[in-house]
Amino acid sequence: MTQKEILALLDRYLAGETSFEEEQLLSRFHETYGKGKELDEAFFTDERRLAILSKIEDQIHLKKSRFINWKRWLPVAAAVIIMLSITGILYFNQKFENISQVEFSQQAEQIMPGTNKAILRLADGTIISLDDRNSSNRTLLKQKGLTVKSNNDGQLLYIIADTKSKGLKGTNSIETPRGGKYEVLLPDGTHVWLNAASALTYNLDFSHQRKVKLQGEAYFEVAKKKVPFTVQHGMQEIQVLGTHFNVNAYQDESYSETTLLEGQIALRSLQGKDEKTILMKPNFKVTTDHHSGLSKQSIADIESVMAWKNGDFLFEDQELASILRVIARWYDVKVDYNSLPRTRYTLQLSKQVRLSDVLKMLEKTGPVKFQFEQNTIKVEK
Image (cartoon, rainbow, N blue to C red; front, side):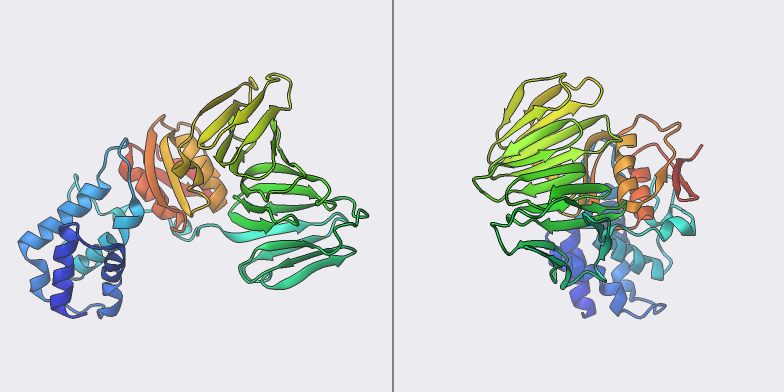
């Protein structure tokens, strides 16, 4: 890009007129410009510099109750910061600190986000490791009436050759570790997305009994069949014929939550404390307390519920402890929950950033400072 084009793009960015693609282009400018080469002073008139700093400050110096869409502004802000830093004229004071100046140990900087990885645990006890490197487009299992293979997209496919075969016995399970996620396509065509630290168990004779057990979190797009589809987790049983819904049932949380996006489902308690069956309609959720066993139905925030599947963290007025449990699963780290402040956050950011970037953003949006030692997130005292 020419200097004139860059200047025009910066001015359009400051006016809020740039598209996402243009902001991505601006964020890559520093990569094409020689490092150490002094930029022309035309980039850095006092008016332009102050406008850029003000715009970035407006985005990152927010109160904890404000919604933050990091994905849109962070790339261009980072690029502008780099360009300004080259000439050494970026000013800092106690009110405004560059987000990159928050110091973390080298260990924290090296913690990367989760990836597509899981293990397939077969009925005979065999364990097959699945990740982006070794599970693409190959047959993992072939036995009477059943073939298990992975495709080029990393999805796990179950193919039943003989739908009349009832000789298959036992269960398989697909398990994602902390720091992993995976997609599964079951024999009936049902599509399942597993979040980190989750497990899905199902019968090999799946076409005759569409029943799965879930630990953790998963999003289901259930194929429409005459045979009912049942999801069972520690607290409840969910019955459907064909629908889209999300189940969050982590054992280390104080509640489980089922959210319906499309169709209709019937939710029944398995613990006898709340015997009634709840019929759910789209855009509603049922939250069940793990201690009392009582359930409550309410309107769902679909964008927030589906953020994990769409590659984002999205926290709406959540306590720091709850946020850190989600982060710990995705980055496979530990959290020291002692002395955590009861600060509540509302923010959004990509799940593809480093752990250190997430902690920096949390520090910028609330009265908390973190340390990262021995793979553990701690609050600085």
